Length: 397
Image (cartoon, one colour):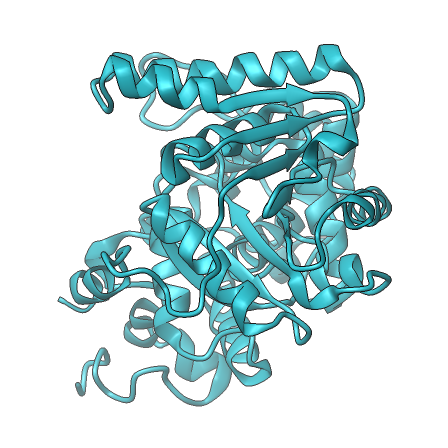
């Protein structure tokens, strides 16, 4: 009942967000896979011209073709009629010329996850855009504040963190900095509403909501394997959580290079509560996978490569937990991290975390959300000395 009501309240409304400015033309800086997916969704949801820009015409053209293919596939599935699909595809264009973005009311960057690159792109965009045009980042882990710190107008910068695959994932984290003004934030929320996605607000903090908590989980898992625990035992240890896939399959889905980068950023920003895994780095360098494909197994089997790459740890026993011990470590870590996020004002209410993890990480709805689950399991009390919801979800509630 808690999760059903939370999802009902959080769904996209029919009324425009107060204070949002009108968006008549949109730009996307970048033309890679994520950029093309986002461009397609912006064209579908906003019904305005969307121009993609990359450094060379060939890359831009490939991105345009990929975005138009998203529209075509939506038509094949019956999500829009042929006439609408043709009109939306016609609203998409691509260029290598920065000046072609000059008339945009909003430009979203989806370039490589390197702060220097993103700052350079924003500086370029600010040189051609109107002073009130929005600058939007799709970063998954970098500080939005740092991206905007050298701009003349940091108040018009906001983060819209889309999840992959963009068409299917219903969540967008809306990231506001201390400088973001009310019109910019309202416009970001309105864009998400028009895309018919759920918006969850987050302050600008490392990893925001979903990635911060997922990597607290994955860090604990990888720390055990780094310490020479059996990979298959570790991978199965979190099954009682009821997540849609095991940790190793999730790492493969995210991409090992991306996971390694995000994990390193979180350690640098938040300290040793997180874990930068040497084994993960080695797996990424080998371009290896944690799991193998199987047509019969419920869960993808663990690749033998994992034991070969990770089999250098020296710690054991309590430092390499598996089974219930690892599950309890993950539960307590989640409770600790959520409490810290609430204390720091990353989110205002536990419900924001619950909604984000249900929609962005597939946390099981029948548990109500992660904070009710942590209260019921005793992890909240163990890790923080209190619960998130009083006695509502405990045995005394």
